[in-house]
Length: 465
Image (cartoon, rainbow, N blue to C red; front, side, top):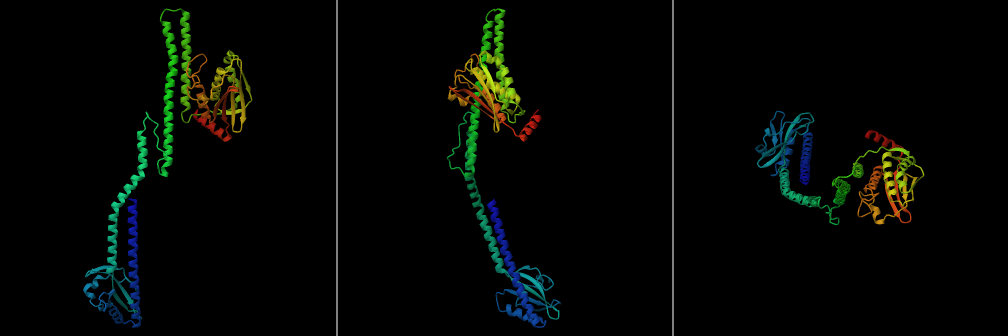
């Protein structure tokens, strides 16, 4: 449609220019003829018969006259005219005088299969007397050319319309074919199979290559998200089933026969422990779900990291003493973070360090300030973690023991994943390194905020509160 409209506009412009050129030529010829007749009138001292003689001389001998003219007196009497002019061009067909010696607007007239452009002009002699001349220009050939041109344009457009429609449909179908393939690929994807991808090596148009890459990347993210969700659901079922199974088993054994008060009390204490474990698991799951929510508000403030670490060490002192561990704090730093989340992350890391450190060894917590961030390193000497497990330790429910048994001192497998979520919320990173010689070190890097960023963070936190 756009191409057709453009062609119609072009044809209209060309036709308008052709018509304008013809009209300009007619006006030029008329002006030249009027000027010549005016010269004849002036040379004859205003005698209108000289004009009549000039008109008859120019138009009387040619069967195909370029123009015809009639000379009238002021009273409207005919002094002379081109031979036979009264047969095709009566005086009433001509327009009135425009005045000022200039031709009136051209009028159209058809007679005898011919087309004329009519006008009237008044010539003034030396004495000021006026001689009116009715002038008829033969434009039959020009009108025929314009008519032929109109027919050619109309015929061309009639032929081009179906061709342009067919060409447009063909071009559109070819142009939209890649999008159709993308649509079909999207329709073929189901939650049961997210492994389908658009072939990157296919001859995609350069305008769609980026779209194909983005689409494949989106599919990869969706597949990973669904896989994580599936694993997460299975892990939740496993984690909840174990304590519930223990709880139910102990209660069933307790109710199989009459028991003493001490037995009932022991069963209730064991059940209470399992309930506490379930409560902790559910709270951790709720925290990880909130941490993944977009726009999670952080109540950042600047505080002394050494004081916060000392408080955490004091809280974990009893657990460390059970295994004859010593926790030492070195260094100091001012940190920009959410104090509650900072404590939770460090507690999770320190709990893991206490759980896996060699009995009677030392756990070190080091604080250092580097350009743009603060590092908190927690080191423990104990059995090294195999290298193949290190990339997955921050995943939910991931544990090094394949059997995933819940013996004494075992956790839920959510501690380090919560640490990773907290660091991501702060825009920081968490890394773990472990070797048999050096032990295991967890490093958390909290970014330091500039003055403007800190003020913006405080404003955001106050609005969230």
